[in-house]
Length: 216
Image (cartoon, rainbow, N blue to C red; front, top):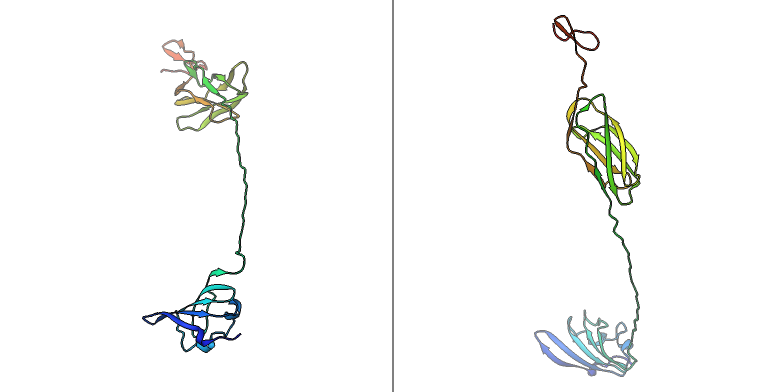
């Protein structure tokens, strides 16, 4: 049925705001149809609230402009309430097994008096699953000047022979596992000297091995 103007009565009026009560045998959907409240447009103001008791529900309807009424809020309904059931089950597990493996490498001592035309005998003692190492010699600036020379680990030790570098100081021998760069050791700085030469005496002069005179 159409809108009944006498069924719309004010409940509260204050500062330009009015809360209305409207009783009707129409359904809520019929009352929300466009133009339903048009006969009351002159009485309604933007922001008013209509408490509507329809045949199927009780609602709060806000007035927007003129006779335009928003869907508002349903306080009660003769229909079965809408119900949502959500069930969820989640199983999440993580298992991790770790075993610590110790690996170490220690350089053996270097021979004293390394000559530039000689050999640097390198050795290292190892523990853990290290199969191969690399020996190298670096200069005082950290640049590699000999090697790397690979050596197989046998019985917990490895050895290698590297040609001695040019005469100088600040050289260091380094050994590192080829499978794990963190397993390494570096020697203290050492020096390389010129080889010794044989001096001969002829008359009043000293001669070196090739016959040239050392002193005049």
